[in-house]
Length: 274
Length: 285
Image 1 (cartoon, one colour):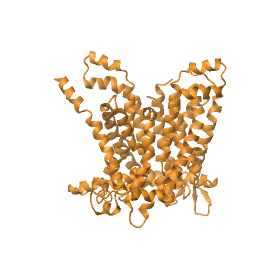
Image 2 (cartoon, rainbow over the protein chains, first blue to last red):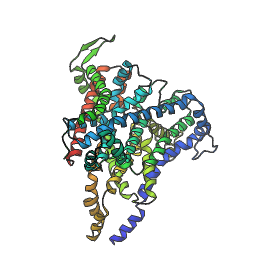
Image 3 (tube, each protein chain N blue to C red):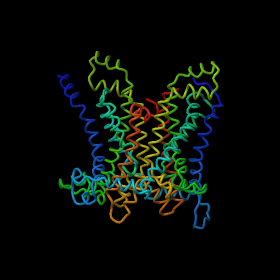
């Protein structure tokens, strides 16, 4: 009797993730469908798929510098942030995973609180701080601001991956006469290559999706695409099609990078600790 | 046991300077504002704890805090069990695994305001699929004017946006259970529930702690998504702490009040972080 129930359960069990994925995809599909419709079709009635397929909305974005420069800005500061975060987090994570030192636990906890700090708290002081350094509306300002949550995250994830490498490897290398930098780059870095990849992915992701700080610190020259999008709201009459197309284009970079780290995403979210 | 070596500080130093620049200096600005008052012209007066007293007694702050706590509570109650259930039913091997992982991660990589835009459009009853369908079924659904509908929309949106995080964490936790455990359970004739309760749940406890606390923190500081969808309305029905804070600081220029509120907000987060951190590091060493 029980095995029968179990068998039936096993047969329909896949329906749960299937329905869940369906639930995730429907709003995205609606955005995609809207981006391929004309504004007249969007507002005139209800069509499940574009009757008059058009790429005009995408054409608007790719032909207008004020639109496509938003993508360039976003990608620029996201890449800068990823590089900076990794550069400072790698040695720090190594120190945390290999040594005990004065105040290490407190320092680690303090780092962690920065990941948890609401960006809303920092919006105004950041604006004043970066104004004082004349950095408003530059890519580096956003890249540095996003370090607030990305550096702690990078240290946590990297530390988790590094702790998975046995300490004997370090000791053997030092006995063999490797200096620290040579050991670190020649032996250690390749061992945690997947960890570095995952960390880069997470820095990319959290910098890419954050908007509150990015839009506070930029006005024109470094404005992220997600902030440029709000333009269509204020324009006379809502340009739904272009808004949808711009939204679709912000999904693509994420979808591309996610494919490369698909096997490690879960471990990264667990801060390297599963 | 890790060796004691204070020279490790040199490795930490660059990171420390950078984070201090982007966290400590701004936080000190906030502390400064919170104990001073101004009448413009960049002239400041010492105000002591006056702002803190005002904030803690203001109905506006307390109601935003309560709304935020209720929101976080509902989010956890829905997303965590749902996430565990989905993770338990996910395929274990084959082509289904990467497909599930990639499709499920997709909402996590969409900029927050695009998530807001997607749901704002999706829920509109003139051009949105959800709003339009509900309307044609006879429901008078309108998230702009009805507070309950606004709340439901925000919760469904957050479930859509973040449940995958719980799924991914639990999936990773489940994948780390050796097959031998399941074989032993089968030999012992353990029921499905016993298998979940005594093998899977203990292995999940660690990732679930991470999931619960990450979801709590992030829903507790949610800003962009509700701002885009409802703008805090109708009325103040969906004005959460962050929305209220940004409004106070950048539109009302109430620097002292905003700073005091920031610090109280931050202290709450700090307290929860400390609990989280203690739980997380308890089993290490």
